Image 1 (cartoon, rainbow, N blue to C red):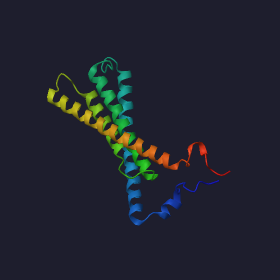
Image 2: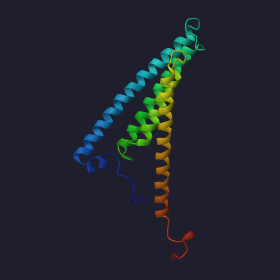
Image 3: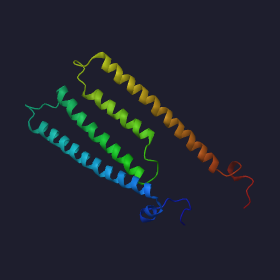
Image 4: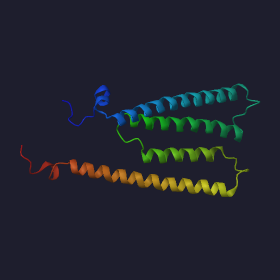
Length: 173
């Protein structure tokens, strides 16, 4: 039996949307295509980098810190782009609004982690390291706060959905 609360799918969903919602969906779909192109390009560059490092070991040694940083920086670039694309796809499915604070904060945290990986600690000023660490700490606190709020809202929704009385007591058969 079909759930009365199941979301509309495909053409039925599209027909139920207003003009602005259709515009919003079209923009998100276009952004998704563009981000997918960025992911493909970043992945291609990563594959070239790794293949180059495997073929020309004497010239491009992957155990050297600079090469290691370049490879893992490229990997994080792909991961960040994929996570961004996934968040857009979730918006297209209309599970959430366009802006999802938790996802935005997580992507920002990934970007800061990527920056830490590609930094040359010998050439980086202490103030820049402190600023990045402070940004990471602030993002972590925001992420935790948003996660806790989501958890409390889910628990409240779950509690309101439960039948009255423990274990169904007091209900008629």
